[in-house]
Length: 387
Image 1: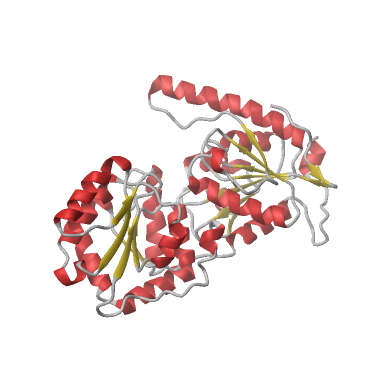
Image 2: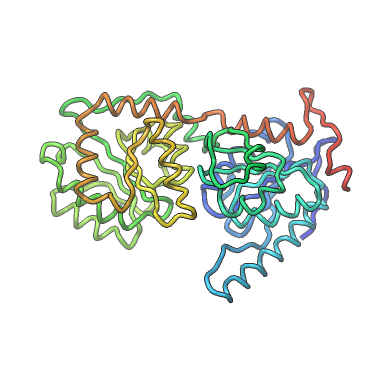
């Protein structure tokens, strides 16, 4: 892959390295929007999974390289290594051509080749870590970073020298979520409908499709009859969930995908969700109380770390999946629905935990390392010295 050097006047490009799931792509897109609005030239280096980045961000140039997630078995590991090595060569060629002022990595194996290549070329690197426990890819390249922007005040899994590079900025969220920050949360009053939003991550989760209907079935008749349930399920679990709800006389809105999730989040009184970094950030910015069931097989159990941080702030009820029996989940829903004051306090605590200006704070950090100053110019960087 080759490309002409990317400059706007005397301002060299800022390169973002991201790919994979929305948890990595959403903050990259949010940062890109801020940087473009500030007059920066932005290039995204991603893999084939980065198809949905910034559908209305035509100002961002997109380049794709090879990458792969870690595959099981010796043959799988060799295929992963080969793909990452190929991606490293492609990224190195792109960076030498672009000569960017700074590279910003957002984790995942899609970003690792670009970040590693930037470090080898002595291009300043900023890492953004979305989780409360550093991800595997960012941990591999943390030594290359000038700064590590974190989404949580404390991040586990880094060496002391790497901890010293940490700057707490928060986790940038999508514009539609950011727009919810000023909205008011009103808990359900006595006898009013209770709006429950249930999602199991971007692909849904079978445990939610099975356990939430069981939990609802155990609720008192009066509360169960007041529930308005919106639930995301995996496609293969939809029919089973519908049957389970039908047996208890309910017909909730079920789908394998909602394209208006920000509006659903704004409308809900209580959310039952996983604890991915984007989920926690969006709940916090929107200021919505929740019950979080972290995915138990997440790398380094990082979802539990995310949920624990929000729970410590008072914004959620943390319920490990192994403990989230139908009885336990039903009791939690019943207690919260019966206590509007607690719901309101949780909403306020969640909102206080969020960082609505995370994208601006991250952009400030990136531009400082790019050598920009207040009048829009930049000083000499290591990239220029290495070119």
